[in-house]
Length: 271
Length: 165
Image (cartoon, rainbow over all chains, first blue to last red; front, side, top):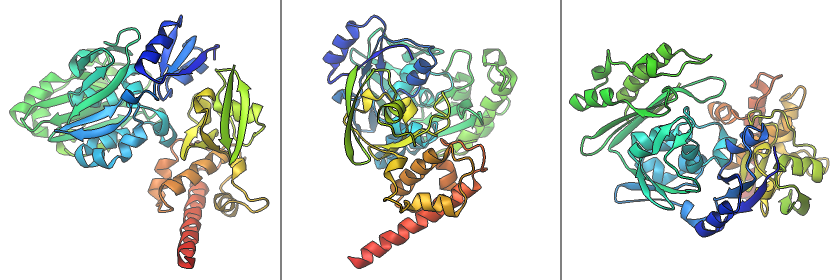
């Protein structure tokens, strides 16, 4: 790791102040992507500003059909939270499927979403549930937030404070993992709101990172049944290809996983 | 440089370290606690697992400076003199190690797992919760057996403690 300086910000103002004094500063949350990439010298930051002690990034509560999740909330906390398990069990299941126990003890939702790895789980939940992302300067809809591989609408020095998830009437998440890395080769998050709005978000597969599969949403709006998705496929040209899976294989996985999700609403399915 | 103060295995310790120092290097190189191992460079193997404020974590992926003020338990903090901790004893009894390199991490993951589940563990849970610890010798089978046996000892000793009260 290149040399760096560590600071624990106590407030938003403190974090801004610390950030403005750095040449190549970075915010640190759980650090379970940032620290490994810094160790391998893929990333250099002259100062790391730990935002986990900022009160506005903490806390977990539900009110008026919304789940408020502070950006510093760890995956283990979400997975084990009785409040999340009872109101949005599929989100708890998703959080419990990330990495391993040790990673879940440190990794945070804010870090995962800000990093926006194309195979990360949380972006699928945020986009699939239509969550709002509240930062130190604005509130964004999930539809406006994700901009591609490792790319988000966050500006320089902007800090995610919390996520506001409208709690869906029902949801499901189906993930097919790379057996070595445990990241998604493809995963599909489906929600249906009390008003009948349907959202289908896909992670792990798309060339441009997480995306909504609109054709599937339209088909399910017409008839909310897995059979409605038969014969529907995302364009393989839009899917990633690597040594683990071809784009045609990923396109097929997306269809299969979407159907399994719809057949198993209420469940988190990990393959 | 930053002065990091920690409680390690119940003792207050401090060291002046570079900010880029990882917790595992603070333990090994500055405090001389070399029981915690470094097995990979990629946060995958779990040989560096320690218990930080009641949570099993990979000490190779946490900055020492970020753990200032925390309480850390390492494999050195388990045995009571010559008397092995129940998890160490179970690994010995069930031959849960061969080369031993992954063992400190396995044991700390197991101690934390048993604590978090109050000793109520089944094989599927143990295997799931060991995903963050790699062993290249044993095939995991005896490790799982050892953890289940230790969990049973843990429940038995808790029951005994309750009946004395």
